[in-house]
Length: 139
Image (tube, rainbow, N blue to C red; front, side):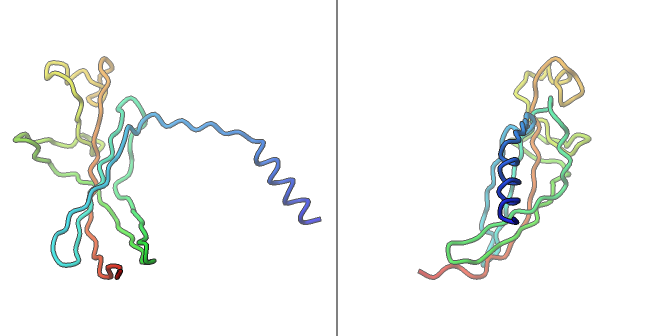
């Protein structure tokens, strides 16, 4: 009887259809840099379409596993201070993102990240963290 119940529950669960739409995250990239010894710095860049939902996260956890079975958990903290980029200083907006819209300076005030509605725009959220990776795999 229990097997029949499990099969029926599974059957009905498969019949249900859910539609999930996420139009606000345009992309992301994760990079790392060797600092010294066994210490590495990780940076996650998340790009958001300003026409979508606000990105609320202030910290993220990244998990990984090596081919030799070691696991790694890193907590990345959102960068909220100003950022120097190609000689310009970017200041985070009220949601902690950096406006990286590809618009002419005369149109920037009308983009969606700045509260306007005329031009599509993008935000970049930067999360950073360091990790100690002490057990490299031996071949």
